[in-house]
Image (cartoon, rainbow over all chains, first blue to last red; front, side):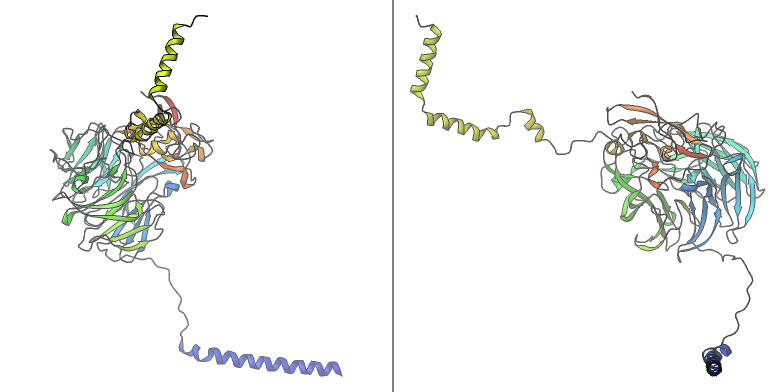
Length: 403
Length: 183
């Protein structure tokens, strides 16, 4: 009897609870259900980037701790967003078409990861879809911790040049229309590529001279030499000396801080050098003849950037003896290349190995630090705009539209 | 016993000195000499002290900071112009490749000063090749540049991957072997 009564009570309680929970559910969800549509099913799709502006830049990450996994990032400096990336394996190089039609990456892989047949590759990418529009084997390429002038592109984007050093110093010429390497030009005793015009380039030679190569309509090269204009054992010029490819103007910067304005061509001409330090009201820095003098000196990797529209040069500077040319900059010096005057000294929050600059009226300066951040400064006054945190591992150089 | 000539002379000098000087006079003169002496710096050590406090340096920034005890650090003296990961952090040593890798038969050349003996030595920075790059702690990744040159002077450039003539051109780490005394 007692058991029966207990079970009746339990059933009543459970019925009451069930009714209560239904009422609660209706109260909680009923009205919202009617207002919100059921979430729609989705298709997977792929971004096609809109046409880029002057602040959409390419940044190469050498990923030094895993250099087989290098990459090139497409970055929007206005939003600080990473828009996409392409592979750039093992000491890769990259250049952008001057009109923004494509960009090119020269890289190296092995069929079995770290071994097997080696492939030196040139890939061309559509800048909006980041899809490959060409992907060819190169005859070879120099394996060097990437220097920007290991690769170059002519003023009209027709030829891409890739530097090689084995078995001899040479430049492979890639025809972007034919999508193939059309010629290899020997530059004995010389290295790097500084392009001029649509079909010419110059290389720096071990004795301080220039080798100038001009190709005719059929691509046949003629090589001329410019006499030595610096003494490498005394004061070599930096590989990362900035250039305006369209006009063939290079400002070669020496380890001590001399600037040699050079107009490249079949007969390259070099102006009398001037001193960065003297432009800043200091004594010119010593060269190897007095290597222990501690003073302000240029240094870093991509240590200088040029803003062509107003001929302003940005150079990373640090204090040290001679032979500190790879030290990161603690200040960024802005110089007027026309008046040979210092415009301003910009102290940096973090030492930087790299500086880049966009070419537009509201230009942006790009710096990095040991953590792989990309710092964006206002090109007008050097004030910070934003930090793109941990963009990569080892940001080594940049390419901005129209540079 | 006859008095010697020397004794007679000594007595005469002493008596004359005693007759002409007082103890106070002697003390006064000695005191004056002590007081005035610092105004006449005569010894070379004083003149050196008066020279500029920081003499002109005769070492590079690297050489001033170099040490000779820990070869797994970038400031170890032989690493004055090394670019890469130290093989000592990767299973190898200062002139030894980690197992399974292969030393490059050619290399770039540096000249480094040993702080222990003050002598300069020629260093061959041979790469160890055949594995992907050694991902050691960042403190093992070095990029120093005493007497280092751009790649258009390749024999003194440490940015070139020196894995020429090895089975694989993949770079793994860097060593710093002494190959002679410089100069």
